[in-house]
Length: 258
Image (tube, rainbow, N blue to C red; front, top):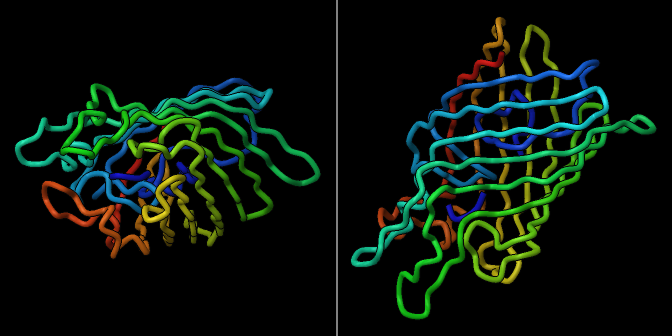
């Protein structure tokens, strides 16, 4: 990665934990599976431009409480390995989250906790003298507010952020709009700012424009154009492949919810 918002169902191509939405009238469990042409998180490539299988399960009740799990293939840990050093392991990201949604004075709020789990990752193994990352597993809390088509979300890391030593207390600020264009089409512009505590040189801004089409029977397709100003930042160049994880991309996605 090195760095990593299921924005809404429509933002399949760029995401992973949900924004504020209205609580269901009765408890419900929903599932989703999908594939993307590549996995991007907060604008940064997670699969070196390669396709990824993804899927999740969500529980929500009428009281506004919810729990969920979501998983995706990744490659950034392997790509961070260096020749002659112990290879980094971990090919799956598992997001575990829970929170509470409510409305007040016309604003829909969403507060919660999110755990990014990289099973079997050994990212804390030194790769060279004086160079050390932390375990990639990351804990964040988040708060979001939605007014009409606009959602602002703030995420705050309670641990080191995706393996950066000393990055506890990092912030991600996310502003997204979701415009209903009719005929099942949603247009979603987004801008975000990742602030990496203790490593200002790794901070960056990302932006995306996503078009989603609900084709019925639980199936949706998406196309997203993604840019970041990390495209000239050496922190986001793979150590083993020289692939630049912050470069611009177009991401296509197909998702089925049931």
